[in-house]
Image 1 (spheres, rainbow, N blue to C red):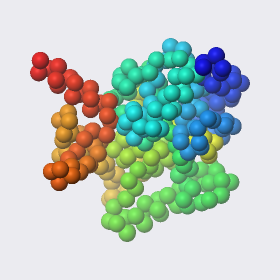
Image 2: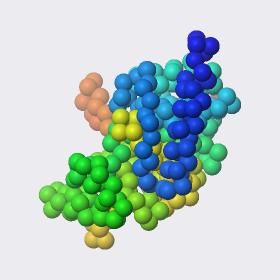
Image 3: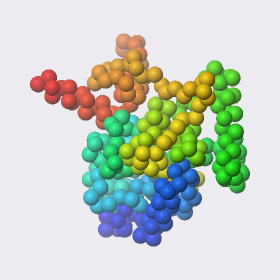
Image 4: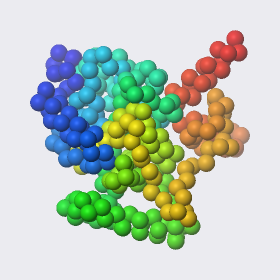
Length: 283
Protein backbone atom coordinates (compact mmCIF):
# COMPACT_ATOMS: atom_id res chain seq x y z
CA UNK A 1 0.00 0.00 0.00
CA UNK A 2 2.88 2.37 0.77
CA UNK A 3 4.10 2.17 -2.83
CA UNK A 4 0.90 3.81 -4.08
CA UNK A 5 1.69 7.04 -2.27
CA UNK A 6 4.55 9.44 -1.85
CA UNK A 7 6.11 9.16 1.61
CA UNK A 8 3.64 10.66 4.10
CA UNK A 9 0.87 10.95 1.48
CA UNK A 10 1.68 14.49 0.28
CA UNK A 11 3.87 15.46 -2.65
CA UNK A 12 7.08 17.24 -1.68
CA UNK A 13 5.80 20.65 -2.86
CA UNK A 14 2.80 20.43 -0.53
CA UNK A 15 5.04 19.50 2.39
CA UNK A 16 7.32 22.47 1.70
CA UNK A 17 4.37 24.88 1.61
CA UNK A 18 3.04 23.61 4.94
CA UNK A 19 6.53 23.69 6.48
CA UNK A 20 7.01 27.31 5.39
CA UNK A 21 3.73 28.26 7.08
CA UNK A 22 4.83 26.31 10.15
CA UNK A 23 8.16 28.12 10.35
CA UNK A 24 6.37 31.47 10.15
CA UNK A 25 4.00 30.38 12.92
CA UNK A 26 6.95 29.44 15.13
CA UNK A 27 8.65 32.77 14.42
CA UNK A 28 5.49 34.71 15.46
CA UNK A 29 4.11 32.86 18.52
CA UNK A 30 0.33 32.72 18.65
CA UNK A 31 -0.17 34.29 15.21
CA UNK A 32 -2.52 32.43 12.86
CA UNK A 33 -0.73 31.75 9.57
CA UNK A 34 -2.98 31.00 6.56
CA UNK A 35 -2.05 27.97 4.49
CA UNK A 36 -3.42 26.08 1.50
CA UNK A 37 -5.26 23.31 3.33
CA UNK A 38 -5.24 20.13 1.24
CA UNK A 39 -8.00 17.65 0.58
CA UNK A 40 -7.57 14.66 2.86
CA UNK A 41 -9.05 11.15 2.86
CA UNK A 42 -10.88 12.03 6.08
CA UNK A 43 -13.67 14.54 6.60
CA UNK A 44 -12.85 18.13 7.55
CA UNK A 45 -13.43 18.62 11.22
CA UNK A 46 -11.89 15.23 12.06
CA UNK A 47 -8.36 16.51 12.50
CA UNK A 48 -7.25 17.37 8.96
CA UNK A 49 -5.28 20.41 10.12
CA UNK A 50 -3.29 18.46 12.68
CA UNK A 51 -2.87 15.56 10.25
CA UNK A 52 -1.45 17.85 7.56
CA UNK A 53 1.08 19.22 10.04
CA UNK A 54 2.06 15.72 11.10
CA UNK A 55 2.44 14.42 7.53
CA UNK A 56 4.54 17.43 6.52
CA UNK A 57 6.94 17.01 9.46
CA UNK A 58 7.23 13.27 10.02
CA UNK A 59 10.45 11.48 9.09
CA UNK A 60 11.33 7.83 8.64
CA UNK A 61 12.93 7.63 12.08
CA UNK A 62 10.03 9.24 13.96
CA UNK A 63 7.84 7.37 16.42
CA UNK A 64 4.20 8.50 16.27
CA UNK A 65 1.56 8.62 19.00
CA UNK A 66 -2.03 9.67 18.25
CA UNK A 67 -4.60 10.34 20.97
CA UNK A 68 -8.17 11.58 21.07
CA UNK A 69 -9.42 13.03 24.36
CA UNK A 70 -6.82 11.02 26.25
CA UNK A 71 -7.43 7.69 24.48
CA UNK A 72 -5.17 5.96 21.96
CA UNK A 73 -7.89 3.60 20.74
CA UNK A 74 -10.78 5.95 19.88
CA UNK A 75 -12.16 5.88 16.34
CA UNK A 76 -10.58 9.24 15.47
CA UNK A 77 -7.14 8.33 16.83
CA UNK A 78 -7.06 4.84 15.29
CA UNK A 79 -7.99 5.99 11.79
CA UNK A 80 -5.55 8.90 11.76
CA UNK A 81 -2.83 6.57 13.04
CA UNK A 82 -3.62 4.03 10.31
CA UNK A 83 -3.27 6.65 7.58
CA UNK A 84 0.04 7.92 8.97
CA UNK A 85 1.53 4.44 9.35
CA UNK A 86 0.25 3.13 6.00
CA UNK A 87 1.85 6.03 4.10
CA UNK A 88 5.10 6.22 6.07
CA UNK A 89 5.80 2.86 7.67
CA UNK A 90 6.99 4.58 10.85
CA UNK A 91 6.77 2.96 14.25
CA UNK A 92 3.85 3.85 16.53
CA UNK A 93 3.59 3.78 20.30
CA UNK A 94 1.09 4.37 23.07
CA UNK A 95 3.79 5.48 25.51
CA UNK A 96 4.21 9.25 25.55
CA UNK A 97 7.88 9.05 26.56
CA UNK A 98 8.72 6.94 23.50
CA UNK A 99 7.07 9.22 20.92
CA UNK A 100 8.95 11.87 18.96
CA UNK A 101 5.78 13.23 17.35
CA UNK A 102 2.43 13.34 19.14
CA UNK A 103 -0.85 14.28 17.50
CA UNK A 104 -3.68 14.97 19.91
CA UNK A 105 -7.29 16.04 20.04
CA UNK A 106 -8.51 17.86 23.16
CA UNK A 107 -5.66 16.84 25.52
CA UNK A 108 -2.01 17.37 26.35
CA UNK A 109 -0.50 14.19 27.85
CA UNK A 110 0.08 13.99 31.58
CA UNK A 111 3.74 13.00 31.13
CA UNK A 112 5.93 16.11 30.86
CA UNK A 113 7.10 16.49 27.28
CA UNK A 114 10.75 16.90 26.30
CA UNK A 115 12.71 19.22 24.00
CA UNK A 116 13.12 16.49 21.39
CA UNK A 117 9.36 15.96 21.08
CA UNK A 118 6.71 17.84 19.07
CA UNK A 119 3.02 17.89 19.92
CA UNK A 120 0.43 18.69 17.25
CA UNK A 121 -3.02 19.77 18.44
CA UNK A 122 -6.10 19.46 16.24
CA UNK A 123 -8.12 22.67 16.19
CA UNK A 124 -11.75 23.15 15.09
CA UNK A 125 -11.94 26.93 15.62
CA UNK A 126 -8.58 28.75 15.68
CA UNK A 127 -9.94 32.31 15.95
CA UNK A 128 -10.63 33.34 19.58
CA UNK A 129 -12.49 36.42 18.33
CA UNK A 130 -14.88 34.50 16.06
CA UNK A 131 -17.78 34.38 18.51
CA UNK A 132 -17.48 38.16 18.84
CA UNK A 133 -16.73 39.14 15.24
CA UNK A 134 -17.77 36.96 12.25
CA UNK A 135 -15.70 38.91 9.71
CA UNK A 136 -12.22 37.52 9.02
CA UNK A 137 -11.06 40.93 7.79
CA UNK A 138 -12.17 42.60 11.04
CA UNK A 139 -10.65 39.95 13.31
CA UNK A 140 -7.30 40.40 11.54
CA UNK A 141 -7.54 44.14 12.19
CA UNK A 142 -8.42 43.57 15.84
CA UNK A 143 -5.36 41.35 16.27
CA UNK A 144 -3.17 43.94 14.53
CA UNK A 145 -4.46 46.67 16.85
CA UNK A 146 -4.29 44.38 19.89
CA UNK A 147 -7.94 45.20 20.44
CA UNK A 148 -9.13 42.32 22.60
CA UNK A 149 -11.86 44.18 24.45
CA UNK A 150 -14.48 41.78 23.07
CA UNK A 151 -12.81 38.78 24.69
CA UNK A 152 -12.45 40.59 28.02
CA UNK A 153 -16.11 41.59 27.83
CA UNK A 154 -17.09 37.97 27.15
CA UNK A 155 -15.22 36.81 30.26
CA UNK A 156 -16.72 39.67 32.31
CA UNK A 157 -20.23 38.66 31.21
CA UNK A 158 -19.53 35.09 32.31
CA UNK A 159 -18.58 36.36 35.77
CA UNK A 160 -21.70 38.52 35.99
CA UNK A 161 -23.91 35.62 34.94
CA UNK A 162 -22.26 32.66 36.69
CA UNK A 163 -20.07 34.27 39.35
CA UNK A 164 -16.94 32.93 37.62
CA UNK A 165 -15.36 32.48 34.21
CA UNK A 166 -17.29 29.54 32.83
CA UNK A 167 -15.12 28.45 29.91
CA UNK A 168 -14.94 24.68 30.28
CA UNK A 169 -12.33 24.29 27.56
CA UNK A 170 -10.46 26.37 24.99
CA UNK A 171 -9.98 29.20 27.51
CA UNK A 172 -8.14 31.99 25.63
CA UNK A 173 -4.47 32.59 26.35
CA UNK A 174 -1.97 35.34 25.61
CA UNK A 175 1.23 34.12 23.98
CA UNK A 176 4.60 35.84 24.44
CA UNK A 177 2.82 38.94 25.76
CA UNK A 178 1.25 39.65 22.36
CA UNK A 179 -1.36 37.57 20.54
CA UNK A 180 -4.51 36.18 22.13
CA UNK A 181 -4.76 32.55 21.05
CA UNK A 182 -7.30 29.73 21.16
CA UNK A 183 -5.39 26.80 22.72
CA UNK A 184 -7.71 24.25 21.03
CA UNK A 185 -10.47 22.63 23.10
CA UNK A 186 -8.13 21.38 25.80
CA UNK A 187 -9.48 21.57 29.37
CA UNK A 188 -8.37 24.50 31.53
CA UNK A 189 -6.23 21.97 33.40
CA UNK A 190 -3.96 21.68 30.34
CA UNK A 191 -3.50 25.43 29.74
CA UNK A 192 -0.76 25.52 32.37
CA UNK A 193 1.19 22.85 30.43
CA UNK A 194 1.64 25.30 27.53
CA UNK A 195 3.46 27.86 29.65
CA UNK A 196 7.26 27.58 29.43
CA UNK A 197 6.93 24.10 27.94
CA UNK A 198 10.10 22.38 26.78
CA UNK A 199 8.44 21.09 23.64
CA UNK A 200 7.23 22.73 20.44
CA UNK A 201 3.43 22.92 20.25
CA UNK A 202 1.86 23.21 16.79
CA UNK A 203 -1.84 23.82 16.20
CA UNK A 204 -3.57 23.14 12.89
CA UNK A 205 -7.09 23.90 11.66
CA UNK A 206 -7.76 22.28 8.28
CA UNK A 207 -11.24 23.61 7.68
CA UNK A 208 -10.24 27.15 8.68
CA UNK A 209 -6.86 26.84 6.86
CA UNK A 210 -4.75 28.15 9.75
CA UNK A 211 -1.53 27.06 11.45
CA UNK A 212 -0.17 28.60 14.66
CA UNK A 213 2.41 27.64 17.25
CA UNK A 214 3.83 27.98 20.74
CA UNK A 215 7.63 27.60 20.60
CA UNK A 216 9.53 25.99 23.49
CA UNK A 217 10.07 28.10 26.63
CA UNK A 218 7.42 30.65 25.67
CA UNK A 219 5.26 32.50 28.17
CA UNK A 220 1.61 31.49 27.84
CA UNK A 221 -0.82 33.22 30.21
CA UNK A 222 -4.48 32.30 30.56
CA UNK A 223 -6.67 35.42 30.50
CA UNK A 224 -8.05 36.40 33.89
CA UNK A 225 -8.92 39.40 36.05
CA UNK A 226 -6.93 40.41 39.12
CA UNK A 227 -9.94 39.85 41.40
CA UNK A 228 -11.10 36.74 39.48
CA UNK A 229 -7.93 34.73 38.86
CA UNK A 230 -7.78 31.87 36.38
CA UNK A 231 -8.50 28.50 37.99
CA UNK A 232 -8.27 24.96 36.66
CA UNK A 233 -10.49 21.99 37.35
CA UNK A 234 -9.89 20.82 40.92
CA UNK A 235 -8.51 17.28 40.82
CA UNK A 236 -6.74 17.40 44.19
CA UNK A 237 -9.18 15.19 46.10
CA UNK A 238 -9.92 12.78 43.25
CA UNK A 239 -8.24 9.39 43.08
CA UNK A 240 -8.10 7.17 40.01
CA UNK A 241 -9.90 3.88 40.67
CA UNK A 242 -7.47 1.93 38.46
CA UNK A 243 -3.98 3.25 39.28
CA UNK A 244 -4.58 5.26 42.46
CA UNK A 245 -2.96 8.44 41.19
CA UNK A 246 -4.04 11.97 42.10
CA UNK A 247 -3.45 15.43 40.68
CA UNK A 248 -4.05 14.57 37.02
CA UNK A 249 -7.04 15.31 34.80
CA UNK A 250 -9.73 12.68 35.40
CA UNK A 251 -13.05 11.55 33.98
CA UNK A 252 -16.02 11.31 36.31
CA UNK A 253 -17.83 8.01 35.68
CA UNK A 254 -20.86 6.27 37.14
CA UNK A 255 -20.99 2.61 38.12
CA UNK A 256 -24.54 1.37 37.53
CA UNK A 257 -24.01 -1.77 39.60
CA UNK A 258 -22.97 0.05 42.76
CA UNK A 259 -24.68 3.34 41.82
CA UNK A 260 -21.52 5.17 42.84
CA UNK A 261 -19.48 7.85 41.13
CA UNK A 262 -15.80 7.13 40.58
CA UNK A 263 -12.84 8.72 38.84
CA UNK A 264 -10.41 7.46 36.25
CA UNK A 265 -7.37 9.00 34.53
CA UNK A 266 -8.38 10.63 31.26
CA UNK A 267 -4.92 9.87 29.83
CA UNK A 268 -5.36 6.13 29.31
CA UNK A 269 -1.73 5.23 28.51
CA UNK A 270 -0.52 7.18 31.57
CA UNK A 271 -2.98 5.26 33.74
CA UNK A 272 -1.98 1.87 32.32
CA UNK A 273 1.72 2.56 32.76
CA UNK A 274 1.21 3.59 36.40
CA UNK A 275 -0.99 0.55 37.02
CA UNK A 276 1.56 -1.82 35.45
CA UNK A 277 4.42 -0.21 37.39
CA UNK A 278 2.59 -0.68 40.69
CA UNK A 279 1.93 -4.34 39.82
CA UNK A 280 5.63 -4.83 39.02
CA UNK A 281 6.60 -3.23 42.33
CA UNK A 282 4.38 -5.72 44.17
CA UNK A 283 6.06 -8.76 42.56
